[in-house]
Length: 183
Image (cartoon, rainbow, N blue to C red; front, side, top):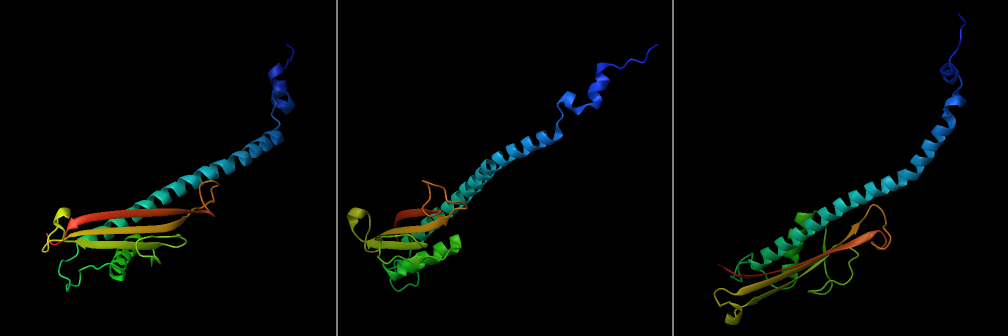
C-alpha cells in the first residue's frame, strides 16, 4: 500500500490555501471597531444625557409646584410668621423650597414676575390675595393666587448641534396655584 496523502492534509499545513491570513483579518476587525466605536459612544452619551435631563426636569417641576403650593396656602393672619406677602418675602420662601428640593442655588430674577435670560438658575414669584366674592373669596377666607416661575441651564455631556446652545439646554417651569386661604 502506498502512503497517499489526501488533499485535506495539504490545507491543514498551508494557511494560504484556507484563507487564514491572520494579519489582514485582525486589521479588518480593528478598522470596523474604529468606525463603530464613536457611534456607540455617542449613543451611550445621548442615553445618559436624556436620563439626566429627565431627572433634572422632574425635580425642577416638582420643586416649582411645591413652592407655589406653599405660597398659596400661607396663613391668613398678616402677623403670622408663615403669612406670605408679594415681593422679596414670596421670592425668598419659594427660593428656599426650590433650593432644598433641587440641591441647586437659585437667585431672584431682577424683575418681579418675569425671568429674562437664564444664564444661571433663577426664580420669581407673583403672589396675590383677593377677597372678591366673584373669585370665591371673602374677608375671612381670601383666595390666594401664587405663581412661581423657575429656570435653570442644564449642561449636557456633549454639545449636540441644533439642540443645545453652547452645550446647555434651558429648563423652565411655571406653576400657578389658587386656593382659599385658611380653610
